[in-house]
Length: 367
Image 1: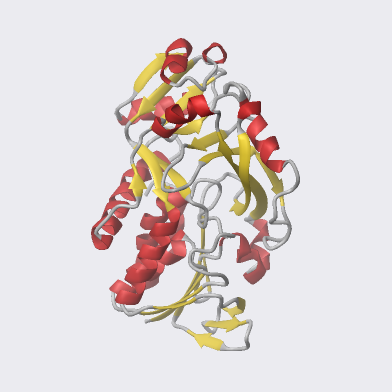
Image 2 (image 1 turned 30 degrees about the vertical axis):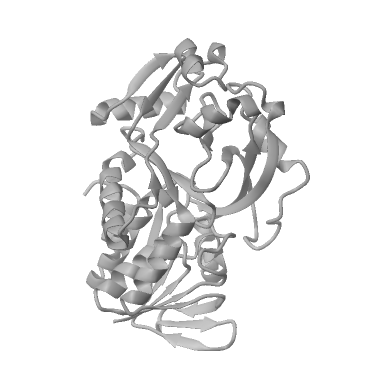
């Protein structure tokens, strides 16, 4: 089949690779470079971990995600992954760290549970008195997005696929199977895969009933000199407890200490607009993390980077068949870790025509 993939984030790259290696004629269209720093997949790194709430459904899929990454590492001959483990912190009964703990126990995954005093002893940047408990696990770490993108691009080309960077899709005729480029060129296809992230609503405005675009930002920080060694050895932090909805990736893969919080997001009408950091925005994100972190005013803001995501109302992934197009949106704040597996599943759906099975898998529904 002739397949056009629109959008070269992790889902688009992985989909294009699996389709190309199965012998399909694949053209991948990306409006920016690969990787595109404005895309949700374009930052330095993303977290992968076993921890999910036992009832979420995604706990059941995370094993497949790890298997798919291992398949990619084998094809690349190297793993763009820092398996430094993860840490969760609880500050209030029923917070997300407690939900993750329940999921880890239900799955029988390895973990080490400790109280706030022990957390502060192990990690001197923490205020132990603000914590109910912490737990760590070796089963997680940081995926290094930029070398992953470059590696996948090489695999796609080696399999005979074509990547057209800095080429913007202006519209789609899903019924006819055609992608119209901003230049006026028309790309005909038997199937179209749309993995356009926060730009999907520009191609399918009616999907605004299911998808909402948000803008958020992450901040890269320089910690106090006496805490740098502790941060360099720290695990990724999935949740900092309470209602902060915060995560942290320590320095790795050539990138600095990154803080991000789900509290720092706002509905956004245009993924292309307002992407520059606002004055003081980095400090706003940083200061959401007190407590449980000490001396945050001593953490200097190095860089603030905006991100645009689509979210569904229930924060599950989205999939739909529209004419000859398979539309996938796996943002919702936690999509990257499943990207390699999404690529395999999308390729299956293109070949079998069973988009409903893909939709159910994306939503982590049983069956």
